[in-house]
Length: 209
Image 1 (cartoon, one colour):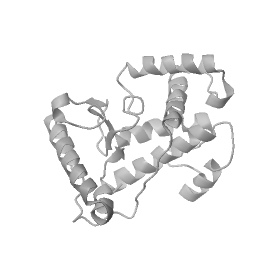
Image 2 (cartoon, rainbow, N blue to C red):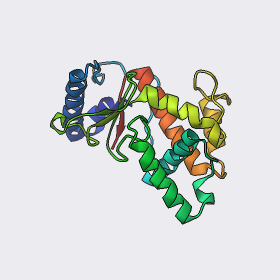
Image 3 (cartoon, rainbow, N blue to C red):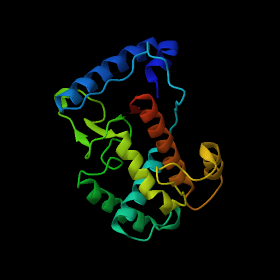
Image 4 (tube, helix red, strand yellow):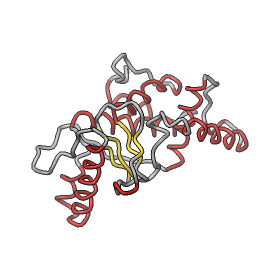
């Protein structure tokens, strides 16, 4: 979060690129009736910031948990199933993605944005909008809701507002750092969860890159 602030200090070339990218994104969203812009570097950075990441495979495993949860199927860790079963589950992920309703599923693995605006379905912007991630844009508010809805399936207990009911973020981080059957899924969940909180608190986009 606060990508422009970070790059203003460390990466002038990256700053120019992302300024242009955010401008394209804001214009494309406006055409869809959504008003949002990335806070500029003149804005005071919000206290809550986050930068993190994980391998693409972790994201697929987290998407698998969402698929199993949505379909009401037994939720098992990826590490506990055979390769054949995992491949079948990935086919089901594609089936769920084709519904074009999930903000976690309908997004590029490696590029694109979630913005802190509440819109029901993921956006699929036209090519001429020149928005990274094949034009798929999600809502960080809706992504947070999806994460909260699947949390109990992997042993995380959010409260009614979607925040973990552990001892706060540090307590949750310590719990996720330990080995367990859902270690990779929980790690990816926590990274995205914190990114959504920072996005909503500061008005910034979650940026995949």
